[in-house]
Image 1 (cartoon, rainbow, N blue to C red):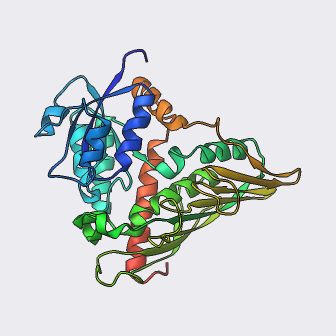
Image 2: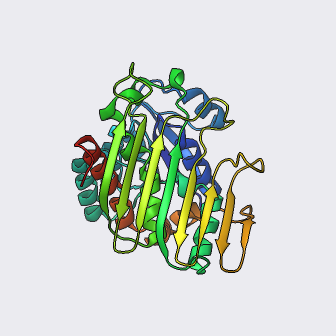
Length: 339
């Protein structure tokens, strides 16, 4: 791994590109070029952060460069599948922002191309991969600290920041719906912590309760999942109040047969400042656990997988299944909600 992994970005429409690129650079990557159609809201911040990285006018120039091994994609959600398919066809591995795609037809094509090319198609579920307290929770669960996991409850509130949002943000077809988009994070966590390879969407609903002037925006969503391994509930929304000093009070509760873990990922309004507040309760203790040294192993593992053609960061089937369930839950919600 002494040789840097050369990377390029196709689409910088979402600010998740900063975490994707920054964490892969920390794992030994080198961002060597980027492309975006038009002038995204993120442009000034991206150029400020990566001033030496050139912009190209045609992404084929990046896909045809034999030295580039990984393509990062944070374009408009509905466009990500097309870019990922082109990248894999060009012999590149892919890390896309969530959602990795917005329709089952797109997912079917991604699956077919990935199987044919053998490339890696990964989705940066940042609410697990970029949160050190979730890393620590995974270690505790693996060590048996709460017994067998039987339920997860994932909450994903977000700040709307409506005046700053681009037009595509309010276009249901463009962003894929609130469950397909935001709730893919929590679906990923449910499958991961319960050890489920598949699940059933038992209930799903969406609504627009606070933004009637932008009817294409879904500002609330919920769903429940069940599998042979466990059950889960997910709620996502765009209702973060103005007084909260960050974008959202994201939480995850993991219930086991011998205890539970609660993670207050980004803020704990009752206690400390800072992030990554993890609380463990089991038969031996109840305590708050320091997560400062837990790290973000996904990105180094992905680098290892690219070099060695392995699946240590995330099984390929898992990435596919998360997006399949997210899209199916979105469809169910828009069809009436009951399975």
